[in-house]
Structure formats: C-alpha cells, structure tokens
Image (cartoon, rainbow, N blue to C red; front, side):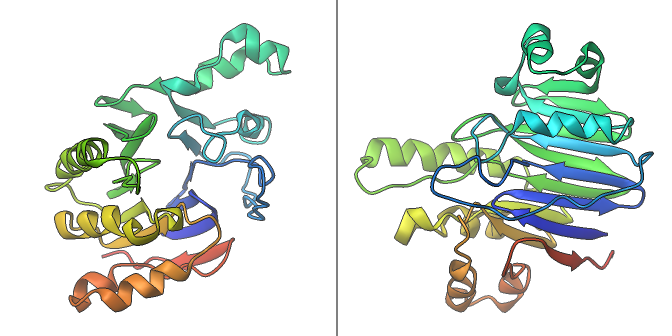
Length: 251
C-alpha cells in the first residue's frame, strides 16, 4: 500500500488497483492559508473513491466532482450535510449523471459501494468519520471526530465533548485498523493531544497519521517525546510536508 499526505486532512490511499481520496479541497479555499498539496494522476480506468466527512471548507470542495471527467469509474461518498440538489449541480456545470456516482451517508450506518464496506461514526463536530474495508485492508478517517476541548468552553461543554468522543472511538476497539488518520490540532494548545492519546490507547491501529495540523507538524515530535510507551509512539507516522509519500508494509 502507498499513502500520500496531500494537505491538512486530505490523504490518498492506494491499495492494489484502488485509490481512496479522503477530504480533498482546493488549497486556496481556506482564508489565511495556502495549501500546496496536489492529487496524483492515475490511469483513466482506475477505480477511484472520494470521501468527504463533512462540508467545512477545509474538508470538502464540490470541485472534486470534476474527477468524474477523468475517471469514469469514480464513486463519491459524501456526508449527508454535503448534499447538493440536481438543479444545484446542473447550475454549476455538472451533467445529470454525476448524481448516480454520489452516495450520501448518515452517521452510525453501514454502506456497500462497489467493493468497499463502509461504516460511519458520528463526528463530535460535523458530519461523519469513516471506517472502510476493502481488499483485506481497513482504514479509519476521523474527519472532525475529535476531543475538541477548549479553554473558555466550560466544564459542561468540554465534558460532553469528551464523553461523546470516547463513545465513538470505543466502537473501533474490536476492529482491525491498518491505517488511521486522526486530528492533532495545534489550535487546541495544551489539549492538542487529547484525542490522539485516547485513540492510541483504545484501538490497535497499525499506522496512525496525525492530521488537521494547519501546516504546523511540530506537535508530532513533541507528543512522541511525551509517550512513555515506545510501542505506542512507534505507531505514529512522522509527517513533515505536503505531498509526502509513505510506503506501507502489509502485514
């Protein structure tokens, strides 16, 4: 398998003949940031699966639908909050057949999309997280599912966030996860590692990719220095730059 970190929370996973793309958006969609990641090109007959966990502009961009012009076998799996009407899509230049390629998903449900088994979790922010199985491999992309603790939010709000986050992650405790993509947001400051820490302790994911770091990857090394369990630290993948490529050894 090969993984490409595109930018922010966007990753490409290549597993056998299939390509999975998670949470792509154009690099200039978010005010105050320029993300430079570029999607690789594939043969036109490649089975491509495009996921969007929710409609925030740092996770979803309707222009990703243009991939259908290059890849006839593309399938789109979007959280229901990304839903666009046929008239809206037509107004923005998409032909009616694009609707047949989109599956809109709810939280807490299971779906089968042409060779992929998909289970969704409920995000603690918006939309869903994805657990995906295909070709004997399994992947988890959290989207904005995280323990979003903030100073000033209050004990009640932060407590509910923690409870809801842990409840969702516990649903993964007995699942095999080869690759996981989990938020580690520096805007949380001293709380940056809460979600990641709980995830590592309560799942057996082989490789865990931090994400949602707003181009500041310094927290990865800092967190790994804090971990006393060397085996747990070794599961965290070091991300240094956009368009970084990782070759994953298949167990």
